[in-house]
Length: 141
Length: 178
Image (cartoon, rainbow over all chains, first blue to last red):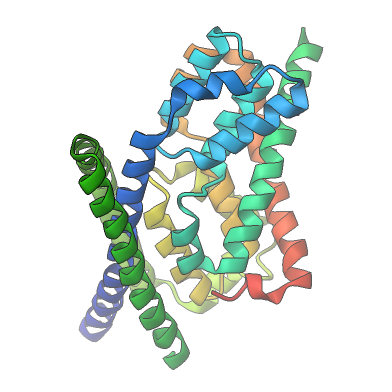
């Protein structure tokens, strides 16, 4: 048992050492993007039609990084400034499911093909979910 | 085993190269705008504070997995023949996993090496969109009906994302490999 514990600890330490530079790099990159992301230009991009709004929302959400709470606050602000619920929903969904910023880390740890395909699927799903959510709410009255 | 340690070594080097590139971008930012660089460091320290507890939990989980779970167990519950149990375990795991996503990649990578199928990794990552502690905030901003509808779609689409990855994996075996 002691040998097994030692072996598990060694394996865990080696995982930690492999992960550490990626996590530190990702946190620094996220911090850079969060500070550089120009929230104020976002509101000017919306208002075309439901599909385009959802597409723009999903794109911004996919590129943006940060705590999901920020997406709720940003979404709430955009909604109150007249941006459609299609755009806001797509933004909220892609914020938590698509990760352009996290893509290098995901590719390094789970494989390039997996990371690219998964993010593309999630990006498309964000648009579909935005449309379905708003249409469902409209049906519910 | 040897193959897995070679992969780990390669990913280790790539990680340090990646950190070097990001540090260079940060250094360039610091040269161009010192004030912005200081703000970035403040944000970085806040993020680090949030990540560290999760990182500890994840590495504890990895340790426990290495100690207790054998590939046969993982193959049974998360492997290619895990059936509906595998999907339910992946959804529950994703919903319950907290904090930033980066540490969870390590756990999924470890599970994959032990036989987890990658479509379940996709389900796990997608169902992380359901943030239980943040539901009150979502209700506060968008209302109860909106929250319930959105959460239902997120859970349904987490399964769709797994199914889509499974389909893609059929035509592209590279998805299962790192």
